[in-house]
Image (tube, protein in one colour):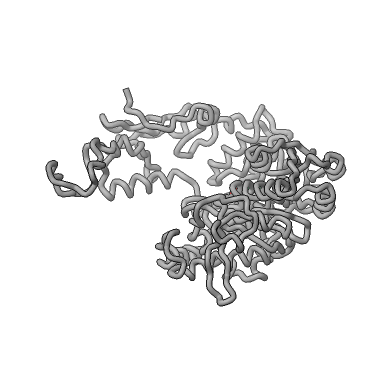
Length: 520
Ligand SMILES: *Cc1c(COP(=O)(O)O)cnc(C)c1O
């Protein structure tokens, strides 16, 4: 793209070979409401500032004891409107759940209710400090405690750690508890088993924690091969990590049998509960023999995916692992007061493995998630799961006649519908279809994941989409599928109408430019 530079603006809209963008070029680079935006370093100058401060008297004493900055910090100075416009323009080049349907499979991109935002902005939650005296933040501690209570009840588990900051962080927390439990018995097991149908973060977590990771294959119907898993169990296996519902959008029906076998072999069962949205209020993982499971508040409980402060991935624990849970945690006294249990409260905490973070910093997420639970109630949450599953099946049945749906015959799916790129013509692939969907105004679904399906396309509608929005998506998806089956070459250049066309994804991953430098 023709990025404007300090010497002046260049028209950014290129005339593409296909002629679609063929039109008079503009002097600003902008095109109606499609606004070009240079980097902040290209519009501002480090010599200017957006605020008026009194001149510094060089000789005057300061209270900084000689530690004052001796050189400029090198950040650009912009006025307030320039700053607001810069970030607003950037935000308009992006796609968000407030803009349209966001079908990313496994990500549960559901609407973020405005009521949650209102609650999270209450000063008693928004303006507190992690080191504030605990007596002065009793309400906030109560929110953390009550949210934890809801999570324990919904999962049928006795204990919860609220400090992990994301799903993958929660996985690490669970695995560290499993390791601490083995270590406490003097049993240094080395292997964690991860089925093919598990999320990619599962093997990454186990490896990060120092375990050897071994794959367990999936059956032809997309579930864990129980016989293969049982065969591999033994005294070197610390545990298993199973995503349920799994990344093929299917419920692992044999979970209880798997859990019993793992326990008999002396291991622990980690369940990746990021897909809890499909079963909340219907299934309690504690009844299935789970020892540890993370929950993504930004998925099931409607908090924003990023942008709203630190994220949150609480972990629930079984009786066996509860003593090893991390610090700090909130405890309610008999007198109804709340306090944080820390290292020094020896008799109140078990042989904890340590801590994941210094503080519970995710007050905004806790407040939003509890608001969501209280506004739905237990029956409402059950309906969330039912409607999410209904919507996914509506998408599956609306596309299976023209798009390869490898597990459609295994029965209804859970929260997401999985397709493959079989029979695409003209060398077209899943990537081309995904890019063509952008031109139809949709964020693409998850692509090339899970790995068990060739050219996988994973669509998760969530319960918050109306039948009308699903029908519109299915119509658009059918149209691009028909073009892909017919080998429509023009799809190889899609998207045509996005602010940016095809990016070099390999260079973006392998040679990222993370720092700006002055153009030569
Ligand atoms: C999203 C997701 C994760 C990771 O959660 P983050 O909050 O992104 O770290 C793990 N497992 C599954 C199945 C997921 O969908």
